[in-house]
Amino acid sequence: MATKVTKVGVKKAKGYLYFVDKKGNVARAKMARGKKKGKGKIEVVAKVGIKKKKGLLYFIDKKGDISSAVMSRGGKRRKKKAKKKKAKKKAKKKKR
Image 1 (cartoon, rainbow, N blue to C red):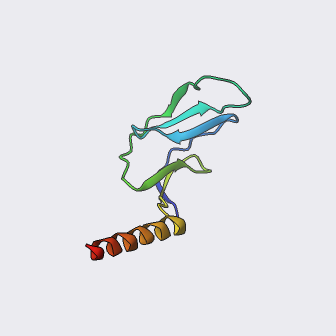
Image 2 (image 1 turned 120 degrees about the vertical axis):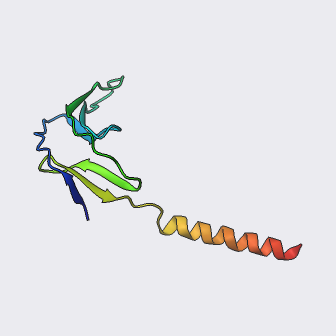
Image 3 (image 1 turned 45 degrees about the vertical axis):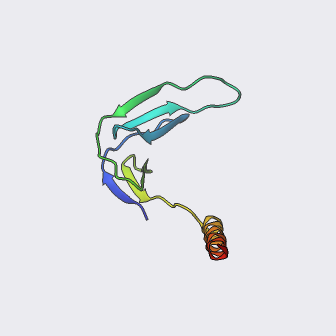
């Protein structure tokens, strides 16, 4: 579940991707459409300067405010592989 970090109230325009940049400000970039090459120009929409915490995903919600959610790391597939590798390493150590 997401939690609201700060109220900004940014009005979103069509054709732009809105995000929280490294400095904690709300920025936007023109979305790539078709086979156009080159990077889109990034412009800061609102200077907020929030401090980001590790393990959280920051985004602009429907109301134009900054919200955060806990990042989902790993999964069933990754956990199964890790368990198999540990089991094989233990078996090799016993053979010595």
